[in-house]
Image 1 (tube, rainbow, N blue to C red):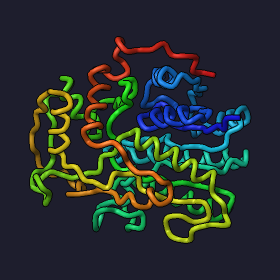
Image 2 (cartoon, rainbow, N blue to C red; image 1 turned 90 degrees about the vertical axis):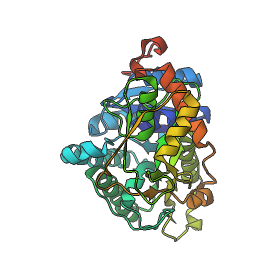
Image 3 (tube, rainbow, N blue to C red; image 1 turned 90 degrees about the horizontal axis):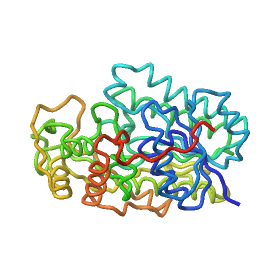
Length: 363
């Protein structure tokens, strides 16, 4: 009998690719999303890719009654919690929305899970909890420091989860801190479709390549890096999805008698970085995308932005040790898959040429 995992934020960028990975691995998946920043077409595309059905609920994780009704209807084994607002700049101008949605929604979800005695959870955290890193590569034991409400909301949820696990050892919680997701599903049917101006580098480059934007602004060309531009750790979204599957297997295979007492893993709960361990500069990413797309990417240099750091990339050693997971896809593959998605969907999921008829999504 298939075990069931509930995915919140199922139609989002990382959530949708993780649903594909779970379904292909034989899991029964239930999806929930309020569609505030995603498209209902995603469900039909996931089902098309996998040949599997994905029951979906258009609902908000802040709706306790709806969550309880869903959990009563489905025998859920574990939850992967992606749902949340994620734009750093927007969080600065709308902090209350971020704390209400991200922190409040997580607490409501945890209460609903607790009421049904469901205590296996994977939380989608972020490398933003490290703030400005003192050294690289960044390990899970690095000091935590946040510089914006988005990062603060992630850190607050991490702290809530830590306290919850300490109060009840039956909870098994995986906190995954990821770096910079990029790429798309190799089919070209799923990818990142940001509303408005992209907050991340790769979709911005892709929109320049497809002609939706005139140029890429590069903030700072005088950093102490190889070419003067900022260095980040870009990880293929399908590698990231595999990381969630590996974390799920680890949670459910845990034996409390063999608890690890280090700061990364304790009593069935663990925190790991998901990254490649390699830094890529902005200009390196631009050149790789030009090669993948055959298009010239116009760039303009501007002054550094406050809060930006020169270099930020992960130490993936703990993920390899605990999850037997490591990134497999390289920068060129990320760019090729991102371009395949963007060229097939020039206006994102609104591109009528590649639309699929959605299944019933208000079950």
